[in-house]
Structure formats: C-alpha cells, structure tokens
Image (cartoon, rainbow, N blue to C red; front, side, top):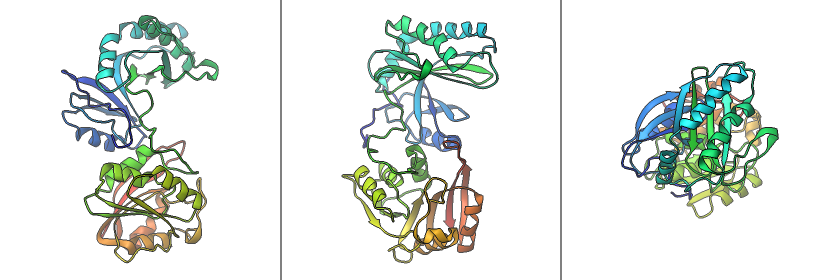
Length: 362
C-alpha cells in the first residue's frame, strides 16, 4: 500500500471471509462501488453507515471506509431491561474465535490477541448504557482468549495492541464485529500535519473517486488545506498532475509535510484568482472554507459567486468539479456558470451535514 497501511480486505484465504466496512453516512454507495472493484468481492448488504461483503481475493482496506471489521456474529436485539444483557454474553460465547483470529491474520491483521476492548452503540431507550453493553461481552471474550479485558467505563482508554471489538444494537439485531487492523482504516500514515477544517481522509477518497480521474489529467484544488484531497487523488491515480493552492502559509506547510515525496505541487494563491490559464484544469477537487470551521479569505469573503466563476474559467469544456459544500444554497450559483450537478449526496460528519457534489460542464 502506498501509505503503508496494513493489507485488509480482500483476504488471502481459501474460503469466503465475511466483512463489514463502516463509513460516513452518505458514502455507502461509493464504498459499495469501491468494494465491488476488488477481485472476488460480493456485497451482501448496504445499510446505515456500513456495507457487508464477502471476499477471497487480496487487496487493501477500502479507502472510503472509516473502518473494516470481521463479522463475528448476530442475534435478535435484546430487550431494554438490564436483565436482557445476558443475551449479549451468549453472543460472545458463541463467536467462532479461532476462525476469526485465522481470518484476521489472513487479512493482514496482527496475530493473536493481546487484550480485548469493546466499543458499543445502540438505538432506542434502554435501562442500561453503552458501558453496560461493553461489560456484558468484553469479559466473556477476554476469558475465552485468555487475555485481559480493558473496559472503557469512566473514560478509560484501552492500551495500544488491544483487539477492538464492536457491538451494535439497532433495534432489530445485535451484531458483533472484530476490527481487522490494529488501528481504524481512516487513520492515514501520511497525515502527520493538520490544520483547522482538515478533511476526513475517507471523504477525500470518495471525492477523488467521484472525480473520475484518468492518466495525464490536470487536477487543481483551489483551497488545498493540509492536502488531503490531492494526496487521496494520487493514491487512486498516480498518473495525474496535481496542484494545490491556499492563502494560508500554515496550510501549505502542512500539505507539503503530508505529501512529502509525492509529485504534488503546492503554491500560495487566492482561490478567487488562481494562477491557472483558462481551461487549464481537467478536474477541480475542493473543500472550500465557507465559515463553518474556517473563515474564508481573500476573494472568497465576497461570497460563492466569484469562486464558481473562477472554477468555470479554469475547467476544460469537458471538465468536472467535485466539491464539498455547506448546503444547497452554496451550490445554486454554479448553474449560472454552466456547471450542472450530476451527483449530490448529503453527508453526516461530526454533527454537520454538508453536500458532496459532482458538477460537469454543460
């Protein structure tokens, strides 16, 4: 893998491995499409924030996934009373631990278990909390594996190396999962520097996929920040030419540090007056600052209209822009400049609901 992440799904085993990839809400279809491009992968289910699938082939974790887990077991959701938690302990006792550990190793995960940590979530009103759920299954799993259980109750942080289990109660099912890798898939090895408003890497990866990159294309990010979208674009298609612009010197320093060793140029420039010739970009990839977390600078302080005019100017007649916007209001001026939405999805990221949009020249 180019950024040094562990190989995860697909897996080099002789029979199907059942996996669940979790993602930002709104990216389920993009994640499913990425998984289907892996050799031998079959998608079984697409649900809220997750895609269930089976695979035998080798490969890396889907870049649009926040995390990837082995499917460990499922049963009907338990009731809302504390006494009902006993049903979750039964789920932990019946999980095929040997098979899970074998599949985890085959998928590039660490060998064995040094400890057990559980992260739980649930829907609906219940007479217990997430820590009660975690403590119902964690000690059972730890005892079966002969390793310590590291509870999260009271805000405790499990030590590095503890195997991460996830238990979800959605009202219909209780589902137990085991993380494949030793860290979440959304943590990129390249991302050693950050700035306020930096983009979540799986979202940047989804943007790169929607851009439909091809060899030799010129890709511009007018508000590059820490460089995440362009780095993800290079991971997807190394044959493209990538240039990022930003007015913030701290952002440019972070971008250059994250992209060290990659053929990506970063320059200081105003996103409303780019040093790019007319029709000088085949693709625009951008997460512009509209004041939600980062205040706009330069000509962006005048509003979205001038920014869209500049995007239309630098794009080729068959060019495409993929952008992340705060709301539909920020999208409407694009139509005046011949940029027509061909894909729009609302995402849910850290309590915000931006629009992910692809726009093509009319």
